[in-house]
Image (tube, rainbow, N blue to C red; front, side, top):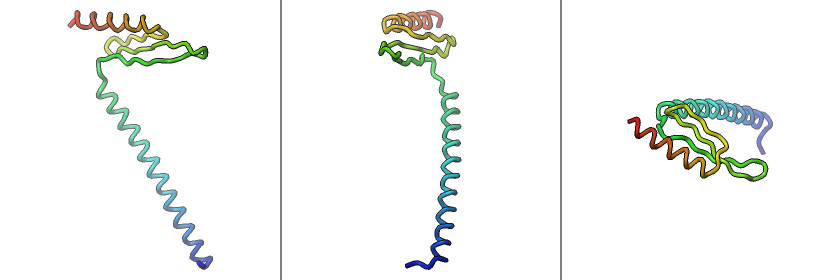
Length: 96
């Protein structure tokens, strides 16, 4: 059995190491978040960002952001999204 003096010292040391790990992991997490934001900023692709969502009734709709024009479309059906993407593609390539 450990003496109470050694056990108390052990707890203090272990708590200190745990606090240091939490601080390091917090710092590492913040650094990683910053790095991810920098990479996202530097690697903005000309392709649109498209995502699917559902409302409370379970109906599916689509949203998109166009990084070239800054245009944003929301709550489109799949057919409308496909038409928007095709239109964007042809307009982009016709201008180039």
